[in-house]
Length: 379
Image 1: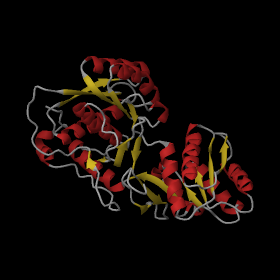
Image 2 (image 1 turned 135 degrees about the horizontal axis):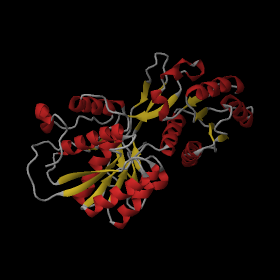
Image 3 (image 1 turned 45 degrees about the vertical axis):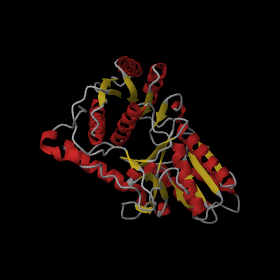
Image 4 (image 1 turned 45 degrees about the horizontal axis):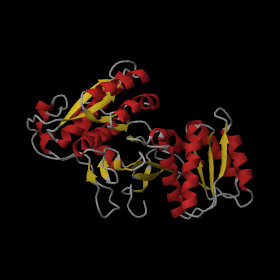
């Protein structure tokens, strides 16, 4: 039978309750749920195997255990006796991930959930592809997508596209981007420029500063490049003190203060709300109601709050279970995951429905727009 969360004997009620992850209230139709096939788990001799690649030893073993818990919960929610989970230890290394993938494939896994990092994913992918299996990886590096590998992490490109569209819908026409000259900055630029092009708007004025450079100085350079017309909205690929410094500099360097935009990293940075220049700045983040429901159920099952990435493990295990059952991942079908709506795209990326939040002086972000269903009109 599919693995059950620890202590399930005293929480048997979970076996008969559907996964309580509601769709966003702004949509007229709800995506299917990843889990939640209610009913008892019955013995079965016909099993479809799902490999689970996690760092169960090494420095990330506690994180690996939490992700294993979430994956077990996903299959428990599906209550499907035909799916068997095969957890395999990567040791947190690329070589370990490759060996874990080969072992899982050799033992009959038709789909793989994991591994954790970019380097592990790159090393495990050849074994998965040669075994004609599917891999639902936890990384957010879009370069790994394709050829049977789906990237489930929230990518910078997707964040930039969502927040750019939201600002454009609110009336912004002239955009700017300030970010470090690293992979994050380059991918934010790609996402923003792609969405602006699709909206037939001018390309963003862009400054990618040296990673250790002065954010305030880069903000003044951005303002100078924008010229006397200024900018309606500026995406800051910055966090912490750098985001505060850049915001304060833009407020004085531009003729009119723009709407400031950020990334999902702002969701966990409560100190940003204390900067006056960042008041009401927008950022994208996963659906809060879905996440709250997942965390509540996880804590009930395991007695502790899950780490952020555990939600990705839940989604990956649930999608891998579906892939093993039907022969391939459910591409194009919008479903409700632990972090809100999610849809697998043909090229190997996952499209998520992201809500829009505004920084608030209370320190608690304010919901501006609920998460749309990926693929629906206007999303």
